Length: 384
Length: 231
Image (cartoon, chains in turn cyan, orange):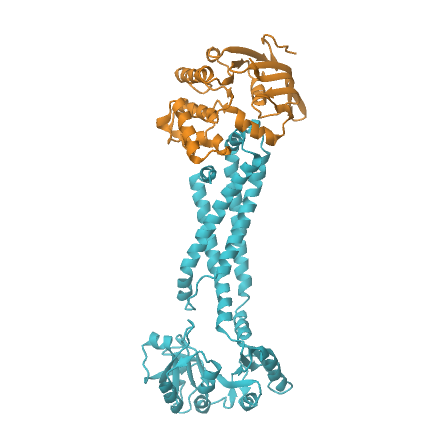
């Protein structure tokens, strides 16, 4: 600690340059924290909120290719399957197509067996089961639109025409509200598959997906293989994945997010390495005579080198921590603004950021440290 | 009186490109403990080189160099650094203070290598600044001090670790006559009242008058050293 004033004084030798370098590092690491945190948080969210005991069965061709409804009893008859629900993509929106609402046509009772952590009022569930055009609406969505249980709302479909009205507008009765817990957004609508299938003008007898819950999570992969094996060589071959893999696959269709994020972060940090390296080099070059004075008074080469490394660590690690702090503070709001889960910045991102800042500090300090170590006291004092 | 500096057949040369330039050749010199020696001579005569060797900042090519009872010519760079920390104080023409540190922090620098506690370091720094008459400027940075004051801070830094020998390279070279006189009187005081041995390189005959002995150098040789054999 007694050397700290020497290191601190060296760091602030050129105040403006140091401040600009610190700002660059702060901004870069704040950016790193947010974009790297986004993918890490997404991974954490997928791991935390999905359940490998849930399987999703889709057509082997692609997700838009429907599967026969006739698969349902065969799936339910499997020994290791607890329950199965068909899922029909409704393509819902409210008032205008821009206001999309994720709406699924499911077997409500089976759905809540497959998702036991979801909760709804038993009385409302009873109403739902008695109401043909009933819907269970997520609590967040209810709040967003100011709906109440008992309201009837016109729900548009971007895919399906309702036979009874001859339009794509479906009258939906809000029978109840469901709560997801765990901080998962509850902004979907679930309607009866039976009602949906009968009322649509085409596509009857088909489902978009099957959601399956297995009895034993450790048997999840085996059951998935059994399901695909059961329908192999049929006209409707299936592809079954657990919910975690399915979700990752859906996100991967947007593009290799990890690659883009890592490429951007890598480019920013690589550029930053030159900036901090240059700052350290200039700073030490200007102070060679001052470092020579320290050596004159008995400071060893190793001690002077340690001062340069300490200075570089203070600069890089200090600024990086401020940047990561800003990222951590703004991270939940950024997620909220994107209408995704409100999540804290994963600690793994902070740790990776600190590691990168440490590497940056070491690499930036290396050339000036070598120069300071090699400098001859007599020449340095003479300004040669 | 025993010698604090004993130089025998000392030679030193530098390389300028492919050329080897001899700066000192077979030089002999004795400086007694408590002596105040002024080294004079034209530029390039080798006086600063000799001072650097005596101060342990550089190593000779050949010859024997004993300072404060230690053979410097046989020491490694690491041992020389440790030796400098305990045995010698340096005063430069341009003060060479660390610009962002206050006067007291500058004076404290040599003490950082000792095992003194922070309290003891503060006490020694205060005493050194008191001795050079700058106790009231302890918190000032070098840029807030005049040239003479900066040089006095540098003198305080040189003597704070209580070395037996002070080496001064043109200590008044950057100061006006009046300020120079004050600095030289301070050096004289340190020599006479505090027993510090001083070797001072100077171009200024007036400055040399404060020394107890003056030697002249030319082309790497001592030309008027009584009792020493200049090669």
